[in-house]
Image (cartoon, rainbow, N blue to C red; front, side, top):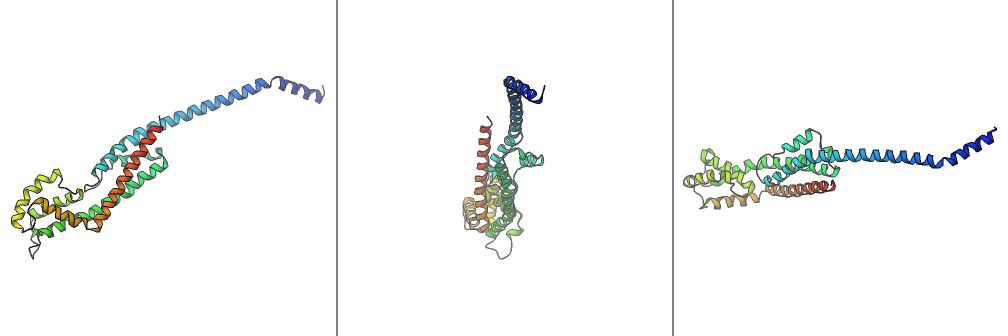
Length: 234
């Protein structure tokens, strides 16, 4: 058999078996694609479950509490975020959402805490100065009752109201202070309103109020993004 006949035989065999050959190739390809898709879907589903259970669930509750307590004095409770970050789980969330989370926790909340830490002693001093306005010596600054009153009332200024946990203590000491320190205000409400007005003119307080509004918007944006991502998982 010469080369021509061999080539002809090979050509005939290929033509006669083309269907079988194509079927094998296509079947193999479909099997591979199905396996790849199943593995990828399983991985994505596993990642979605992990994201929901280890990041979204604890973080969403913490965001809700942050929004409620944003106007209170003191450091923010960021236990869940700290644990999520230390476990390096933020890679599970979409990149744009991760950016927003970092901005809220690592920038906004830190700045808010810093400003509040600076404002608190200023509020205490302003209250003591108000009590001491009729004296030429710093009498109020050396009075234990006045100092305790100022410390408590300064905390209330951040929330714009006399908070329940301090209300009884503040109300109990005010009548005594009225006897010791001459003041124009007749009631505790009038005294507190005067201090709120004083604080509202402070540039740091204005900055604080602006940052709090920005933080609320960012929290709501993160919450909405979480809701959307959860809906897209199902």
